[in-house]
Image 1 (cartoon, rainbow, N blue to C red):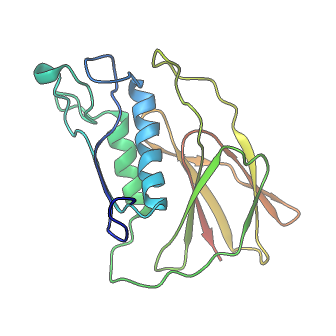
Image 2 (spheres, rainbow, N blue to C red; image 1 turned 45 degrees about the horizontal axis):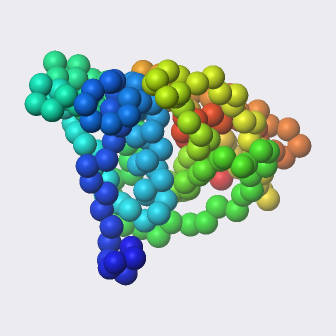
Length: 199
C-alpha cells in the first residue's frame, strides 16, 4: 500500500465479464471462473484478506454488463460454483492458531507457476498451484494449454498427498498424483490445483 503504508488493503468491484456486453473484455464463463479463482488466491498471497467481486447478479438490463457470478434468472455460473467449492475446500472455522511451516521444494518448469500455502488446525497443509497464463483468447474462447508436470519434494515423506482441481463447471475433480524416488508429481494447468499434504 504505497499511499497508506501499514494500512490494510481491500479489493472491491473486481471481476470478469462472462460474455460480450457493454462493460469490459469478454472472458467467457470459463475465463470468468478461472480468473476469479486466481485473483482471490493472488490477493490472499499478497496479504489482501478481503476481495469483493462485482457483482453477484448480472445487471445487463441496467448497464449491459455480465459481471455477475449468477445470471439474471438466478442460475449460477461456473464461477459461482468454483468459488463456493474453493471456500468449502479451504475452510477451517475455529479460533485463531499459529500455522506451522512446511519444508518442501518444487521442481519442473516453474516459470509461470504461482502458489499459495495454507495450513488447517488438523495439521494438513493445503498447497494451491496454478499456471499464471491466459486461459482464453481475445474472443473469449478457451485456449488449449499443456499442463506442466510439477514435482513436490519433502525431506521426510508425508503420510499422504492428494490433489483436486476445478472443472469447467466449477465442480471439484481429483487429480492423479504419482510418487517415485521421494518425489510426488502432478499436472498443473491454468486452473488452481489444491494439494492436500498430511505429514
